[in-house]
Image (cartoon, rainbow, N blue to C red; front, side, top):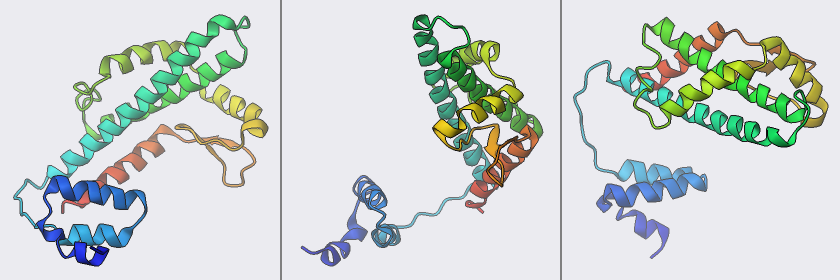
Length: 204
């Protein structure tokens, strides 16, 4: 059966049949197939509170924050574990660890600032996520080793030629690409708020 013939049966697919096909189409950037699968799906109507979209968007943001922090935590402890073979306490591995620690703590500060601006306890949305205890313990250790903002910029400048332009949570290449500038946490928190607002609006 050709694709067009199969598409005529799409309205009979069950969710567990439709979603794998949609994901496969997404993986190969087949937007036409995604549209066929989406438009042929039976529709259901739901009645939810006007705050439902925001609640879902916050949950999504919290889950992403935790995934990013767990990724940084893995790199932090990996770097920490390799330090036993490095004699210099300010050698390349220590420098890399301190940069990862800066990334980790910058993201932690961003989350705390965003939640403070929104009037939300920063642990409320993430305390039940897998890895919460690991993230908290890593934050304690990372704050002892992290670069300051100025040290992070200096580090990125030192490795610029070898590694190329870098983008981090708290540091971005400047517009003219001749250096780096610090992004104030207030600016990043507003950006996060805008993204969450856009996600929430999908339910309006």
